[in-house]
Image (cartoon, rainbow over all chains, first blue to last red; front, side):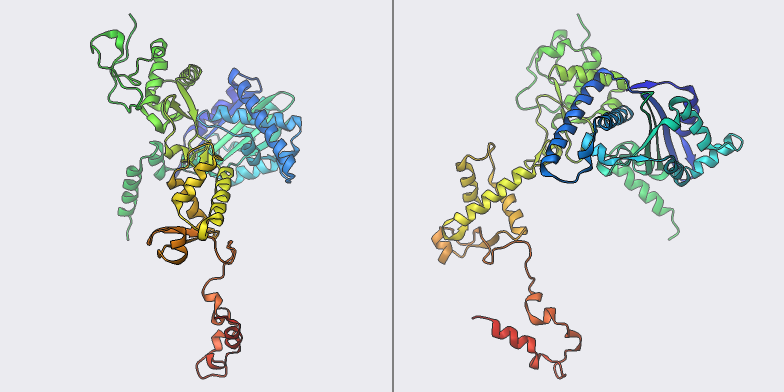
Length: 226
Length: 265
């Protein structure tokens, strides 16, 4: 998946690169990719294809009503593109095809709007303040539309469980990954966002710094009026 | 004359390779650096590849997450990725799986075997619990108990029969068999007893005080009635109204009559 530079997306990335909202920070990014295989992608997509076919072979034997069993060729291709995109977005993680399939869900635009209303409420307020009452959702959809023509897109969300989630490692309060995939244009725009607590953030940044965590906890408790 | 990396601080050394004592000043010997080995392949690595390799090697059998590798070397991500690929292709490093954090990309120097902390130990294969292997081993152990003289067997004897059967490719230590027996006990499939040295235990040749195992008399299995539920009071619908002198009392309890009559002594 080749990363595509798109200046209309830049101002959102700048906005989301470090959005401090009181006790929490929101981090997000909008990325555009073309479904063009790099050398690594080719290898990865082959191994993913094998993994899927193996699993399909197994599940058809055991006769279990697994949703993976109904993956036709084009949905397999879509699945592989989405996983390749995930690998580019999170280069330090491995994504298994079978697992990813369980966590990917097709969405409607209404769901996206809902996600926005639920999670991006405060961010949208900040945006409106910064940009003269402008609507974050509208501006973002316009920008995404320039890249992938939203009305022709299939929308997917990736909701991994704890193990498969790069965000939960950072101790995110909430996170989401959305993909806008235009089959004809062979392009994917990903929008990922997570909310980190300002208090916990430092202790997670350094990795496994438990002593720092404990110290921070002490600081919080000592400052409380108990 | 190429540039040589500065001597690195003491690094974990795998048993097989140790830095050979050599003239410290000679630029050609790369002494003290990670690997310490005279592996000639290390000499052909680019500076970045060597840096990456050293960082990975220092982690020994614990392996290193690629994200940490990028932070530690301070090199740009694409450079690190390329270096890892080159090192993998030269079989100097390899991918490993951390069973507790399956999503992370972990790498390790080729000569190390993943430690128990990241491989999960003998019961894990490629990062996930080897349910099949455990299942087969459990059935085998269960059958060993059933076939044992006197119906009693010790862990050591089970381990010996596992070994002699030749069914399993790998060595199963007594400790591992002990873990399997523990699992079987908790699942109610076998019963753990301590030998009294007499009777059946004497017949089986098990000295007194030794822990051993037998099959449960009622066939075993998960559903076992607890002690309290095995007496009438435990399941009595009238227990709230029962008093020593009341209309409902233990003295005239019909359930007890029934139960006592059903017991065989």
